[in-house]
Image (tube, rainbow, N blue to C red):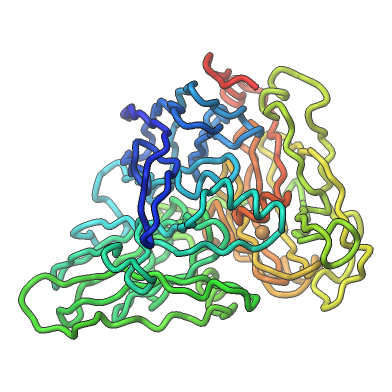
Length: 532
Ligand code: C2O
Ligand code: CU
C-alpha cells in the first residue's frame, strides 16, 4: 500500500458565475477542489493549511478510518476547527472502500465550495466486476449562490427561509440554460463505440437531484464506495453525500447531447431549475444547432426518487460477499422530524432525532471522551422516541412540535450488531432525509412508506443482497432500516446531509467503545490536533 502526500491550502479565491464575481473559499484555488486518486488500502497524508479568514475542517466522506477518528473532520465532534493561520496534517487510512468517495469541509456551510472527488481503484487497477471502461469522467453536482456563503447562512438562520441557490452546477459550471452562463458549460467529448465510467457525486447542499443524459441509457455499477449489481436506467436519483458510478456506452448517433440535472423536492417550492452539461461525439457529422434535452422526472416525482434508490443492490458475489448481521444485539428506532420552537407553525424551525435537537459542544466530543473531560456531552441519547404516535398522519397536534435541546451520544459496545430504523415524521412537513453515518458503511435492509411496523416489516428485510451505503435517503413519510456491526471504535457522527436540517439540529453521535484486544482499540491522537 502506498502513502500519498497532498497539500490543501484553504484560501479565498475570486470566481465568476452567472456574470457576477465573488471570493469563495477554495482548496488550492480550485473549484471544485482537486480530485485525489488512490488504491484500495492506501494511506493519504493531507496537510491542511488554513490561509482563509474563517475556521475550517475537512471530512473524508465514506472513508471508514479504522480506529482513527482523529482525521474524520466534523467540527466539534472529532476535532476543533483549524483556525486561520494554523494547519493540521490529516492521515487518512483507506481500508476496503472501492469506487468513488469524496471529501468536503465540515464546518458551517463551507462545504458549498470546499469539496472534491476521492477515487479509489481496486488493487489490480482494472479488475472491476464490470466491463472495462475506456475512460473515466468525474461529475460533481454542486450549487452557486451569488451572495457570500456566510451571508446565505446568516440570512437562513435569521429567516428560516429555504434559501434556494442561484444555480445548480455540473463540475462547477451552471450550464447554458441559466441567464448569462453560456460559456460556463461543462463539456465532455466521447468517441463513438467507446465506454465511459462516470463517477458522480452529489455535493449540493439541500437537495436530492435527478440526472439524465438525452438519448442514452446508463448502467449503474457502484455507489458510496462499493460495487452494486449492474442495472440499466435512463435516469439517476442521487442524495447529497451519495455517489453513483455508472457506465455510458457512446453508441448513439454522433451528435451533441445534453446531460441535465435538477432537484427532486416534494413541496412546491422554487428550485425547479435545470443545470446542463454537454456530451459531444468526436468526428464529422451534421447535428442540430441545439443539443437534445432529456426529459427529467418531474420535480415532485417521489416514486422516481425512491424506486431508483431501491434498485441499488450489493454485488453479493463470491469475490464481493455481503456480510450483513443476521442477529441483532441492539435495536434503535430514530424519528426524524422538523419542529418549531414557539409552539406553532410560524415559530422558528428546528429539526430533531428522537425529539432531540443537537447542540454542538465547545470542545470536540472525541477529545472529551479520550481525555475523560466531563460535562461536554451526555451519553443518554434515547434508543426510541419519547412517545409513540402516528408519525405520518396528516395533522399532528401542536404540542408535539417542541423538541428538547441536547448534546447526547449513544454508546455502542464494540462488535455489537446494530439495527437502526429511521422513521420520517410529518411534523411541520414531511420530507426525505438523506441520512449519513461517519466511520461506517451500513447495509440498507428495508424501507417503506408510512409507519414502520416492528411485527410485520422485518420479515421482508433483504438480507441477501442489500446495498452497502454510507448515505441513504429515508423516503418522505416513510422509514428505512439499516444494519451494521460496531467494529470501528471512536466517535462517529450521524446526520441528515441536508445542510438546512443539520443547522436546525438533525444530528447525533455514536461512541463505539474499545474492544479488549489491542487491535480493537482506538489509536492515539496526532500531536497537532487543533486546539479548542
Ligand atoms: Cu458528507 Cu458528515 O458528511
Ligand atoms: Cu433532513
